[in-house]
Structures are given as C-alpha cells and as structure tokens.
Image 1 (tube, rainbow, N blue to C red):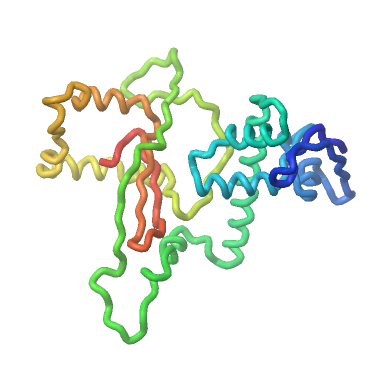
Image 2 (tube, rainbow, N blue to C red):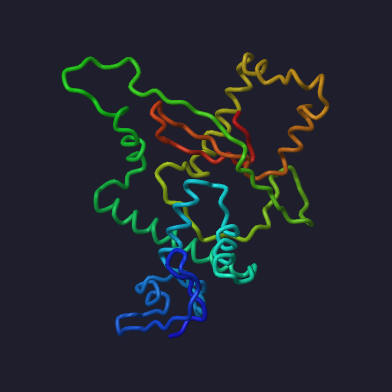
Length: 264
C-alpha cells in the first residue's frame, strides 16, 4: 500500500511511504493506525497523518486555544517550502477528529477497568486538596469552596433552514449531524442541563429581587444596550458560551454549554 502523502513525525515534513498489511489486519484503516498513521479517508486513503504530528498539535492547542489547524498546517508548509492548499487543513481536521476519538475510547476503556466510569467520579476526585479528609480533625464548615462564572467567547451561530416556517419554536439547524461524542466527566450533557430549564425560569419569575437585578441601567443611555435589541442580537446564536465551575485551587469541576441562553 502506498500513501501519496504522509505528514511526518513532528516537523519532518511530507513524504511518500509504503505501508504493508498483515493477515490479522481486517481493514486498511486499522493497518495504518497500527503502523502509526491516521488516515484521512475510511475507504481508499491516499493521505495520512502520523500520531506524532497530531499529538504535537493537541498539546500546542492546549497551551494556546487560539492556535488553529490552518495556522498549524501553514507553519508546516512554510517549513517545507510548499504552497498551502485548503484541502490540507480539511485532511488534517478529519485525522485529528479520529485521533481524539481514539484517545477518548482508550481513556473510557481504562476508566472501566479501574472502576472510574461513574457519572460523579471525576467530580468527587477532581481536587485532592479539597476532597481529602484528615483523620481526627474537626470537619470544616464548608467542605468545598468553588466559584462559577460564564464566558461568551465561544459562540456558535445558529444556521437554520431558510424556508422554514417558524411557529414559535426554536428553528432547526441546517448543520450536518456529527457522529462525534464527547465522553468527558467534566462536561454536562445538554439533556441533563435542559431538565432544570423550567425550574430556573419559575424561580426567577417568583423572585422579585431577581427581577430587579435583571434591569439594565445602561438601556436608558445607550441604544445598543436596550434589552429588546440585546435579546434579538443574542438570538442568532445556538451556543452563547460555556459556564464553568472551579475550586479555589484552580481545578475544573464541571462545565456546561450555554445553549440558546445566557448565564441567567
């Protein structure tokens, strides 16, 4: 089997390589992954990315979330003196998504073997300093000190169908469904968060102090801060950001995706 292009380990570059298949390899993709490369196509792959390059980008993006795939591919192209093409970013994106799913699946199997796959295991063992109890010492008044806050930097525009007749319900997104599943003990699923949507709404309506705090003092001075215009502007987003909870040691406890809503 020959691959026309193979993104080499770290910054080695691209090269044409020959990879073989064994009798135990039932699929081409599994044969490629066994030899350290992730294909960009499941049927007839002609390009692949090595685990080293994928891991390098994963670690780099953890340090700088603004470091995009396009910037990474352009960097490799500049080092090798080749012209950047858009399809290179697309191929790397496919391989990187598959690489993350492989890592998530491996972590899930390891967690099951170690009996760490319960829903609240990560929350109970998130911070050793907060959850550790000393024998013979009096119990603290507050077992855990944590802070919660939202951030609206990670917004996603809702691209609904143009010919859809809206009847008061949320418009249907025209984005293609994805098979990617987030398996993390930190993220709360949309289904779980939506269970408390009406509960929080009724609590806010019955609390007069909450209504007073929702008034916008800037609406009378600035037209762009009017509540009606603000709601209309935020209505174009499907996701308005994330809401996170961290302990006093900076350890992440839980993360919720704010879907068609804000911090309130």
